[in-house]
Length: 431
Image (cartoon, rainbow, N blue to C red; front, top):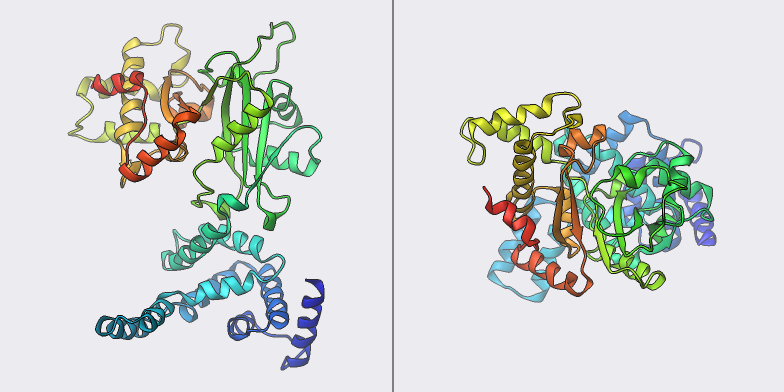
């Protein structure tokens, strides 16, 4: 690869109009899109990557606007090809229509990916773009094209799973601390607790990103089903009796790359972790998450604000004002009516509230898509500041039964059916 880059760079220098000043990124992209040679193409891709990394924020915005103005599909060409195909649906005309519809940006991005650092640069580019979309929604088609390509480049077949422990290089461990998105770590002492002998941690990597983890999965090995997260995060008690674990609790799953937001890495990642654990610890009989419900509190607030709510009475709305009282959960005798109401609402939220045909809750979408079942809801499962703010202190166990994972996944994907325990179904029926 290095020899190809050097040869291509020599060609660039020889062909440059002004080797002192170089070329603009617009010129480089134009040449990269039209050039078919591997040596020149690789060198041009490296030049584009270098030019992008040197840009300030204004230059990046101008670059994105260039991608819209110069690399969008030609509407007239699409219409012309569609009309031709409509009158003669030959393979040749279909191929011409397919070519017209495909965004020239995708071709450019594929060419940029010829650079050895092309993939991480495109991931970084998408991460930066995400921060612009609210203010510049017209840049959305760029995100669509990047997502389309990244979904094919980051499918599960390319991912490698690694066990993380104290022998793992320090720069990876530092990223575990930095990327933890569910239960924040305050330095190396917290990390040490999460890597002790009754804990496991796994990370998924992609060959193009080398030592950049995509996902971290943190696991607690316990006796019975864990229903609260604070005991799992607390320092290990030396005086506590240790029982042989029979349950693996996935208590934190963190996506590490903002540029891969919304990219599915496949529907059986957790199953792969389960199989790794079974190989090491055959005595484990139960596999479950202890998951946050990040949109639950916001959904409650919206339901309370609706004048004609179909799921809340006036008295229940009044009862939910308790949640706005600081440290409401520390009442020595929590209101059983509040508990009963929140349990029912949480079951309804996870099972009935939808975004299209999928659950509204993003964590539910992930685990149900991976073949899990909504197993159990846990009152006051996370009383941290973040847990109170996001989930009204509720947590949910998504259970993974290996014999039912594929069946649950197929029913969810094809028929939009949600696997749910009888306990949760009964809560839904209590409305």
